[in-house]
Image: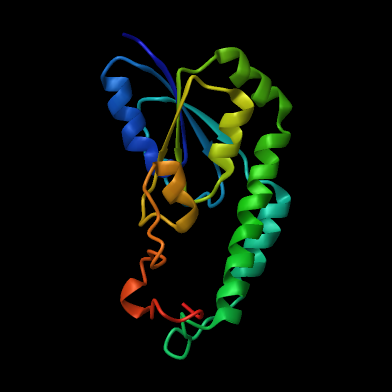
Length: 177
């Protein structure tokens, strides 16, 4: 059974290559955020989405921020908010560039992919799947799942605590955790 796959994100390149070796038609959609990061896949068809000027400006701005890792506190809500906002800005910028590329979007819709595999750290891949409408969506995570991922992965949420990679540092009875 030959299926057509589309794989998003560089971290999924090995999965793309395994699918190609199994005889599947695989297209890797690689948005370029940092050109120094290797896209990993060697066997699938690759479509690069170039880094836009807005994203380059955001990343240059982020590169000027210096953090004292000795004095910083991962539980400081203000610093966490600043960090999350900065990270979100560059994800949104590149996602907007991908969504606004109407020719690519039309080409992907016409392709009628069977499966779209996305890394779920940022939500652009999931959102893009709603636009290109593959028959199936597979979400993956290269890290510990964050709270919004649990429902998508079919993992029931516990009502007594918020699972997190920082679980050993959390007081589950505190509203600050």
